[in-house]
Length: 229
Ligand SMILES: Cc1cccc(C)c1Nc1c(-c2c(F)cccc2F)nc2cccc(C)n12
Image (cartoon, rainbow, N blue to C red; front, side, top):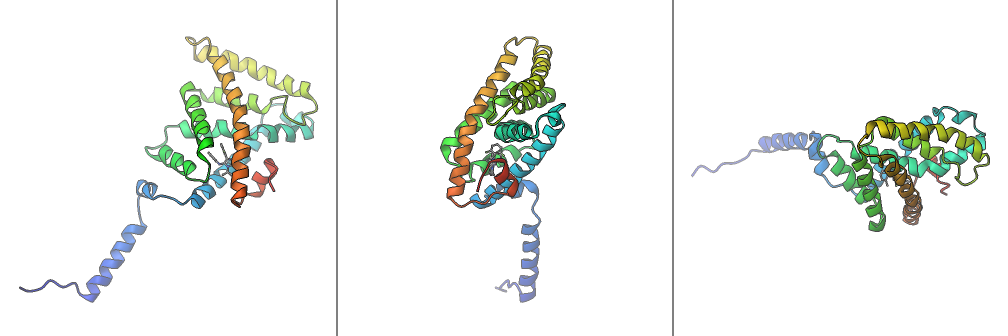
């Protein structure tokens, strides 16, 4: 009989409480919220930009790299950036992050304006790297070997790059034997990944072009390393 009525003040109080509750969500709640392709592209652009910065710092710390011809240093960096970044993002992707983060990253990559034909080879590569269960030393050496690939475009002194790459391949080969005693083919499998990486260069160039066609903006560093704009 006596009608229940929310008073005006109670309405205001309830709205304030609800607003606060929705604003202060815990991470996994946020993860469920779908992001727009633009938001995903922006996040990936930030990730890619910091990956390039990390790549440049890592490369400068490779023993002997800074004593190479300066133009060759640039040619090696520009020629290997995509492959090195695929390797690093594969490590990031395969690291067992707190539950749900890898799926979130995968979802954001899938919804960032990259066409399906490039998504497949990208995740196949991530999976094939994950299956190798590389040690941190193997990951670091494989990245250094990738950067010190003598036959990149515009490299003048091939021999000097080979002299740096050789000893790293030797150490990597020994590590594979030590870490994977029951897999004599492990080193060969690692080098097989480098071949797969090269094919991803082509896909990456297409991804960049398709983003540019849709007028996506890159950071100055990404433009510089991939000769965009
Ligand atoms: C950070 C990231 C992680 C996984 C997938 C993607 C698409 C990205 N983002 C980019 C990559 C890139 C990379 F950084 C690592 C591996 C493969 C890549 F395609 N390259 C570029 C070039 C211009 C802009 C972006 C956003 N971008």
